[in-house]
Length: 271
Ligand SMILES: Nc1ncnc2c1ncn2[C@@H]1O[C@H](COP(=O)(O)OP(=O)(O)OP(=O)(O)O)[C@@H](O)[C@H]1O
Ligand SMILES: [Mg+2]
Image (cartoon, rainbow, N blue to C red):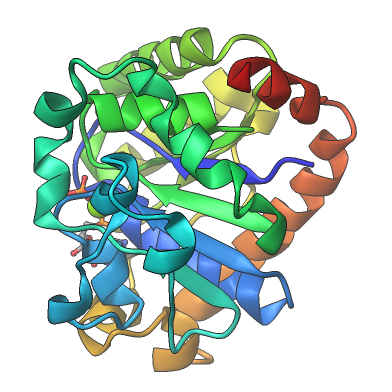
């Protein structure tokens, strides 16, 4: 089973949080029990799922710093079947706080060990950095999703995306696959955008999800209402496109899940 999936890209503003939240909500609507782990000190995924700002603490930081058990920190959300380990400002201290801790890269993996059974899928919203938190997400990963935005990507950028993928894979070892590269925030279908998208597809082939998420006002507005695009604007183009992503993800989880023996890998990591 590929269960733990970080949404990762060291570039900022490429749709990581938006994808985490809407994919979580979409999987929840399909009856999957989903946990969102918010590893961003901004707490944007938590807020987008309707957590009040004053409820961001206790947070993922409390768990990683060994102060609280995950079960005492996880909160339910108004989004069906979606729970959250909230992000908070204290996550900004993680590099310092954990620097002298043994096994600091495994903190998240160990924290999730006790609650994994409660969920079908655990999505991790990563900050745009290569901090210790991101390393923790990589170590905990069974597979990962890489969102890219052609508006933020030049043709040369496609190559540096390759570096991101390679580095991520190297830190994970061969066992954890790229579940998919998601082309998102597509602003307009002009020649330049199309050329970049074609380049990404040429480079990454079948790894790229078929669906491309267009720029859509409903997707952008939904978080300020603490809702996913499905609840905020059912029937919007954004909801339709994220639903298609949900179907592709479910299909890939089925197909890849049998190929990769992640259970063994995880057990090895914990010992
Ligand atoms: N398909 C879309 N249509 C319109 N707006 C979008 C879409 N996807 C994301 N956005 C908006 O673009 C901005 C950046 O998206 P998001 O926060 O998901 O990126 P991120 O990669 O998580 O950023 P960061 O690296 O800062 O955490 C947000 O304001 C979000 O609402
Ligand atoms: Mg984000």
